[in-house]
Amino acid sequence: MVVKAHRSHAGTAELVGRAIQAAVKACDMPEGVFSLIHGSGRVVGSALVQHPVAKAVGFTGSHAGGRALFDLAAARPEPIPVYAEMGSLNPVFVLPGALRERGEALAQGLCGSVTLGVGQFCTNPGLVLGIDGEPMDEFVASAESSFSEAAPATMLNPGVRDAFESGLASFKSTEGVSLLSRSETEPDPGKTEVGAHVWTTGFDAFASNSGLSEEVFGPTTLVVRCQAKDELLKAASQLEGHLTATIHGTEEDLAEYMDLVEILERKVGRIIFNGFPTGVEVCPSMHHGGPYPATTDGRSTSVGTAAVFRFTRLVCFQGFPQAGLPEELKDANRGNLWRLVDGEYKNGAG
Image (cartoon, rainbow, N blue to C red; front, side, top):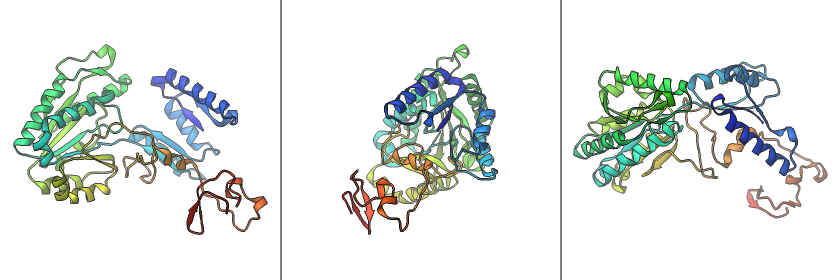
């Protein structure tokens, strides 16, 4: 495995790389199984993808960067898979029952999720959709207060900060979009700080402007106020692929909005009920992926134990004598591995 360190945290990458090398040594693995390199992202990344010994690529970053690597890999004499994670709006749907029961708490939770890590998590909720009415008014008022109290914080590097500011300028210039609230404390440009922002718009403006469905990487979110259920479903239907979608609702809401769930099954890789998308646990059940353009391969996960299958390939041994089989496939099964034998899972010999 060859890892390209990010220039914005080269020292941290070096510390992690040395820890991995120590683990490799402790596990008696070959010394060259892991390498960490530094350099220009475009130059080094392109060279790695095009190198003939490379067999698969994992990438997290911009859509432009991920798509460029994907195209390079596809153009090789021997094409290889690219598992690129390229951005996500992670829409949040606040349904009527949940708004009536806990609208203020939902707004506070939303602010906490949007501002976590200065909005630089790939599961940052950049879009919120709900149905207009008094409960929605109260939710929006609470969001306005929460976001104004959020303190500015430092982004990864000036380039990320500048891209965030450019996204805010695009929102500001879009007809039908209004700034609801922003951090009252002014950010310090010398510290690469930005403040939190929350915006509002209506269904018509959202549906007619594809730019509002593009990710603004940072602590900002757009609240879309729909007039009825059919507008909410139409908004969900026009979404591109994303990593996650969140539904806040009661059991009654869930029963009434199962058609929303069915739409989201085709749009995202993970659907959260009564939670927030930030916070990803490395465990067997975790799926962190989604349809294009969230990723280049929606069948894969970049988090969780199933992620290892990105870098494996199936090999079948047919008709071999026991002496010629890999240890894991021999009838003796000395490692007591769980195996599917004649349609039945077993962890013993046979």
